[in-house]
Length: 417
Image (cartoon, helix red, strand yellow):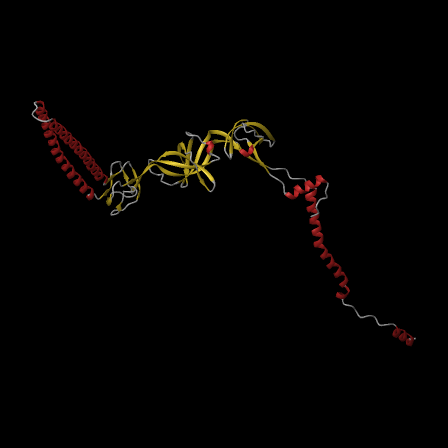
């Protein structure tokens, strides 16, 4: 029995060796790794689905509006232009006689009065010419005395010859000769009288030129330029050389360049003002004095010059300053205004409509009467009250939402992502 048991036991195969726990759990860990790999894909699908639902099924956001309160203020409609400042009056002071510039009495910036001495030219040659003319005049006057005496003598001879001829004591030919001699003597006197007048005129001219050697200020003003230097020789035979330039800076003229599109809006006498780059908040007012008829063309742009004057008692305004000029077509003070963008159905004759938001949030449209306007704001004469919130614009939804709503209307399928 014991032998049989051992035989059976020998025929039965030995049990397999124990397998480690890690080896037996490997298939389960493989299934878990595959699940974690699918998780990002599920997240992407969920996000895409939510995005598609939001774009397709979510209600469109309410339209937003931009409002601005109607306020009171000053309003003007004006034509703008660029301009330069120049003195109302200026003059080039030159020399009328030739000669060496002896001295210059002024410098740039000096304020002079009319009649003040500005410069002197050497007068030696002119003084010499005066002496020559005086001597020649004296010579002519001396000869004139001789010729006058000849006339007296010829007159006496003529009287005597007439008496002799009347008594038959002389021939008629002697009387004729006496008449001719008297006429010749009288003609000589007249010739010398003419020469004397000519010489007197030359002497007068020389004395005038002597006066021109001293140059005086022709008006009151400021010296803005000195063109000649002391010791310089001036030649006035061909053209008058400029010594200094004077300007009246007590009043300045604004020369505004107005385009041909705007010049028709201007009229002489209209209100105008300008501002300076260095003083943007200060206005200098005047009245349009002149619109020059001859334009200037720059780069195929036709510009007309409009001029107006402004006082400059303190000398703040200077030559060639750049000015921003405004010609006022219409103006109103302390009026109710709204942005131009608030107007709808504007007929251009004062009739328009404005949409405003009531205190409860409801929008209302009213007919209003508009007045003067500029590029930004417009006057409202009636139809609104101060503080009313007028609609000047509206918000817009995103382009994708607009595309989605448009797709709905056309029956197109919504985008998935």
